[in-house]
Structure formats: C-alpha cells, structure tokens
Image 1 (tube, helix red, strand yellow):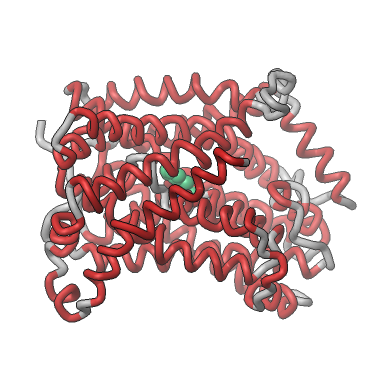
Image 2: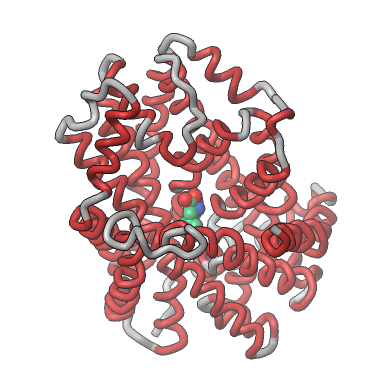
Amino acid sequence: MKRESWGSRLGFILAVAGSAIGLANIWRFPYLVGMFGGAGFVFVYFASLLIVGFPVLMAEICIGRAGKKDPSGSFAVLGRSKRWGFMGKITIFTGFWVSAFYSAVAGWIIGYLYEALKGNLTHFRSTADSMAHFEGLLASPAFTLVTHFVFLGISAGILLFGIRRGIERANKFLMPLLFAILILLLIYGLTLPRAGDALTFLFKPNFSALTPLAILSALGQSFFTLSLGQGTMATYGSYLDKKENLIFSCVPILIMDTLVSIIGAAVIFTIVFSVGMSPDAGPGLIFHTLPVVFSQIPLGYILAPAFFLLIAVAAITSEISAIEPSISYLIDEWQVPRKKAVMIVSTLIFLLGIPSALSVNLLSNFTLYGVNFLDGAGWLASNLLIPLGGLFATILAGWRWGAKASIEELSYGAEEVMAKNSWLKGYFWFCFKFSAPVLITIVFLHVLLS
Ligand code: PHE
C-alpha cells in the first residue's frame, strides 16, 4: 500500500493548525487567563511556548518525517530498538485516550450549538438560570451519549476519506470558516461598552496572581494546545515531504494558534465585561457566563450559534488529529485498509468515551478520590500521559536519535533560513537537549509530589 501524503503546503499548515487550534484555545485558554489574573499568565504562557512547546512540536514533526511511519514505527526506526517503538505506542495510546474524553466534552458543544440554533440560549436572567439549564441538559444520559456519538461520527466521517480528500479538504474548508467567525466576533466584541477594560485585563501584566500552579498550567497549556505528546504531530509529519521547509510552515502555525487563543480570549472577555460580569468562572465560563450575556446583548441570538459553531469546528479538526495516529498504526503495522481501520478505532473510542459521557449523570457517583471519570481521564492525560509522550519525543530527538541528526532533518528544505539565522541551530539544540526535557520533568515532579 502506498503511503498517503499531503497535497500541498497550505494543506499541511491548515491541518496542523486545525489540530492545534481546539477547545484548549477557545475554551481553556480564556478561562485560565481569567482565573490566573490576566496578562501575567499570558506572558508565562508565551515563554513556555518558546522554550518547550514550539521545539517539541518541531521535534515530533521531524521524527515523523524522518521515520515515515506511524509513531510506533518512526520511534522504533529512529530509536533503533523495539523499546523505543513501545514508547511510540504509548504516544498513540495517549491520542486514543484523549480523543475519547475530548469527544464527550465536545459533544456538549455540539449540544449547545443545537440549543443555540433553537434559540434556547438567549433567555437567561442570571447565571443561576443558565447554570440550571446547563446542568439540566447534562443530567440526561441521552444528551451526553447522543452528542458524543454525533461528534465522533462527524470526525470519523472525515477520516474515512483519508489524508488529502479527508483531513486536508476538511481543514481547508473549516479553518477559514473558523477564522471568519472569530474575526466577526472580535469586531463585534470591540464595539461593546467596556471593551477597553477587557483588553487591559488581557494585556496588562499583573504578576501577583502568578502562583506556581499558574506557571504549571501555562506549561501544560502550551503542550496541550500544540497537540503534543500523543503521536499527532509525528503522524502528520510522516505524511510530509522532505522538500518542505519546516520553519516556514511551522512558524505560521505557532502564530495562528497563539493568535486564536488571544483573539478567543479577547472575544470572550469583551462580551463578558460588556455586561459587567467577571471572567473568572473557570470551565463554566462559556456554558454559564456567556449564555447570560447572550441573553442581554443585541444580536445575542445570532452570536450564540456563531460562537458555538466556532468552538465545534475547532474541536472537530483537533479530534481527527488525535485519532489519526491510531489509524495510521493499524494501516502501517497491521496492513488494515483505511476504512476498516477508521471503523475499528472510532468504535473503540466511542466505547471508551461512554464512561466520560455518563460521568456527569448516571455515573456521577463513581468517583476516585472525589474525581469523576471525565475529570480523572483529563487529569491522567494532562499530567502524566501527555508530558510522558513529550518527554519521549524530546529525549529521542535530543539524545537517542541525537540533536545533530534531528536538527539536520529539520534543516532539509530549510537550508537557507538555517544558514542565514545561525542562532536557530543553537536554539533547537538547547531546547531538544535541555530546556524541554528538564521543564517537562518538572511537571512530573510536581505531579508526583503534590
Ligand atoms: N490541540 C487541541 C486543542 O487545543 C487538543 C488536542 C490534543 C488535539 C491532542 C489533538 C491531540 O484543543
């Protein structure tokens, strides 16, 4: 079977951007900024993108492009052993694991989009009202299961068509749609009263709210938003040609991902500040706070569906990228035809997602240390599996395959930029070998000690 590849550079850029831009940008980033006091958090987040996130992104893409296989195959080839292949398998498993609970949560977004289209999100008088509505929906197992199924079904539908006709084509359509909605919402947000206060909150550093937890969350956020540590980028990189200039294609991706987080936060904050509410509600920000605001401001009945469509689109393009490593594993290592692989993997993900989907209703009493299945699954992914995968990738790139070889791989197709900016080599060398593995290890130690 001939291995598939991207049809164009733009296709690759949009697919990787589509993977990166997801719930973490438009939901998690704004609420973290809101909780951790604004711009100080943003500043630390930028720093962790530069010394950990971006280099690990490049390392993973290089691993894929050099290995030309699913992550297990590529890790085994470059690490020259089965043991490394096993570590690659762990990253595939992480993507699989993430895609299950991600789908359960993204299902709520699909449900909210449907609610918004029916006009059900614009009649709230208080947060208590909107919270009751949210909790009412989530209390129904039918709601959480059906929306999980629908979301996963859409994602699997795209994956059936393969790399060019599926992933690439979907991203070429969905990403411009996402940008258009986001820009329109931003323009609207900026016209609202107190928009200036919202922007000040976002951009004026207040370092007093920067607790150690905030710093760790910034680090984790930079990892999650770039879809690292779970085979995604190695898989997307494996469909890439050697001629591709990785610097030229990945820098725009980093910029897009960051811009969407910032603009997403600006949209949410301008909307929330306009009615004098506060953006520190945590995860409930988009489900509780925003609907109250949509009920009060002009054009709320249009804004609500536009906003949830935006998030749904972002989530779909991310979900497919978390699933693809498992599919490419079945295709590359077990010679399973793509359609069959998609059916097998998505069925398993649906089943694995069921406890997460039901954790807010039928299974809400099944808790471990007071944590339900969904939160536990997220905790395990963000604190253990994802950093572990990232650590494997940087140690492979920096030490086992070796910084020299991985930087050489990174330079194929980018010879001119690398020669003109000689500091780039030193930067990647330092990050692959030291800053990334050390900082990721700190995340682990924090988890183990806390
Ligand atoms: N990067 C995605 C987001 O920001 C999440 C994701 C993680 C997607 C892992 C794919 C794989 O929401």
